[in-house]
Length: 252
Image (tube, rainbow, N blue to C red; front, top):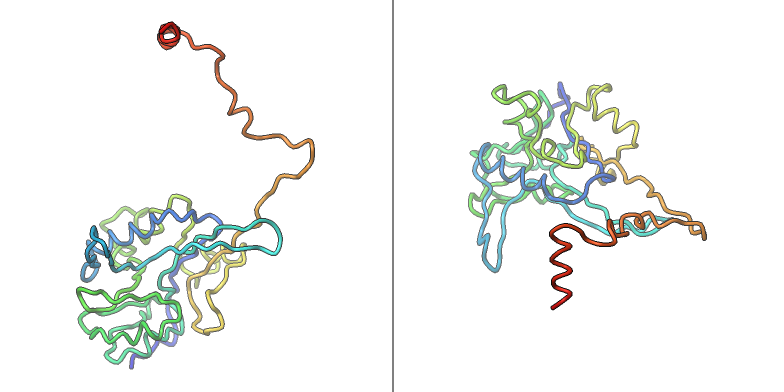
């Protein structure tokens, strides 16, 4: 069985803002693209354009309708990938040492050359964050784009996970949680970042920011329809060439 490091120099991870995630799946596609073209064996797709498509993804987005204690129901988009837990059960259960946690930055990885595809790590992960590649027969998981964040051939602004770089709503943030002044540490403190399923005692590094309460318009007789100005016609009558066409067609 693989041993976990006693401590790590850095604690790299993600902060995911459930308030601003719009469920566009851009993070899913960019993750699939980057990891298929680079680190490890490609992420397989089976019958991608057929009647029963399936494939391997390191990041998925689930959507749920949530009813708050007050106010209307909300649609919450919930991205899910490996949380790079401090006490990762997927590591300690691995019989070959293929699943391991790096001491330099805390990233949990899989050595695909040593993976025998037994699936024990997937059973041990309480978050369902690992997927068996149906073609390669090895376990796949989020790598935090380890081949990207340290790649000096890339511009500095691109040295972050592909999902973070591509997110159009700025709902994903990457940084070092061991640094209290890092962007992820400040966001977690200011917004009340939460652990996913803390009762599992895995100490996940990644944090989720809860949705903010939504504003509502007061229900009074003085309410103004904010869309009304945009629904009024720009001009009462058409002019120019289009106006000539309208007048001609009216005579037919």
